[in-house]
Image (cartoon, rainbow, N blue to C red; front, side):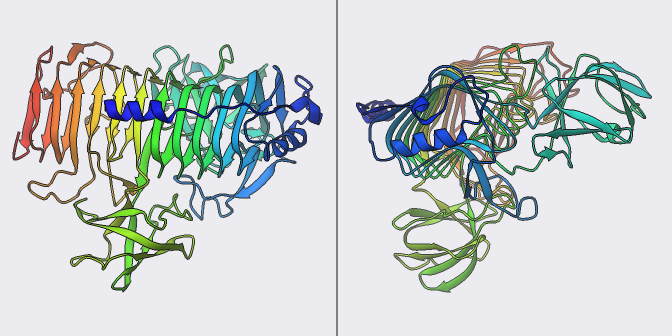
Length: 587
């Protein structure tokens, strides 16, 4: 790990000594509330052939509308299926294409976006720094309302001023700039405790709505089964991920510093097949005094098929409908053997496809889908995307004996080393952090506060999301975990090492060398750590404290559950810890 940190320090971030380009030279002025899109596009174009330039936004507010925004066809991991979103044409606010050595200096400015769009994108860029910028939407695509009175046959709610609505034929309809809601995904937020639970919009669809005061609506209908108490905030969105919050595509050496994402539509900041990403003080959270509780429509930071280094430091991650951070690759399934060296492979998950996932000279692993056992390594001689769902790959050596249709390939060249430290995770109904990469991972000095599911999940699967792959060196230390997992009962483990291998191979470990030390766990229930097919797991010198935050499970005492693990060491921990190793042959 010391070697990894040293390498990152030596890598550094580029020096910029070029020309300063002020957006006001292009007719863009802060606090004008005019559409800045055209002028900013010209300013960005002026930077294209000036390596080392600094693009400066004088302090203030800048507004961006979609009508004059750039449009590009992007296939983006974990977003939408062919049925959900047939067109992959995206609308982008600030688009940087094939630009090298540029700093974008916001001077603390607020960029306000209108409609639905990707706020900014870096496409085939190198050595880019974005800093001192806040991002928000005039009308977030998340609607929020605070419950005031809840009775069996009626409910009164205060609609947030940013959540535009109308009532037609006694039905409340959410709408925004160029969109209305047709499908509904609802999360109930307790703003006092920070707890987020899955909810429903169904009783509101079947009720009659009436405005009874400024932003106050009464719903009359059957609310006898609705689980919501006065003071809770019901948050509602369309589940279709037709855009993402921001996009980093086939880029390298990207630095984000002092960036506030107060709202993002879609999957959050998505980095795809990019190298060396450094995020410092990137806060994804509602703006202070905004009164809103959700900052991201889905994930916060999503990394798919990246390499080099990912470093995330000093970030606040608060207010999500999905995971704050997810780092993974993608398994593609073998569908045909075309020759002794050629394979046809396929994207299997509905929401991930159309991406060039393999490149010439990449190293790959052959993986048995049901066991997740890696049984052969090879190199790519040629890779071609022949349809949205299929790739043709030629290898530099013969296909191994024993390969089966239905097995998968993992691209092990595009796997990153990861450092996540001094961050705070809270306000999510799901996990805090997902990470699956074979290169070194360091997770230290973070706070995981009441995440709805596992604070940390190390998965790997070749049958559901097809998110690869194995881990070989993970350190989780000096973190604080407080009262996590309330949405995952009875398996509400704080840390879960859970590869989705549906068949166990005695002695074969999917994950290896995971050290969990010097952490503080404040738990209200019994489950603490679960691991499956993991070798070299160490859980030592951790402090486990009891909390009365929620009710514990009955007849449940084991805090650590092990299945088919080997070389597990548990020592020096404070607090009574009962280990259930009945599902494992070794301990």
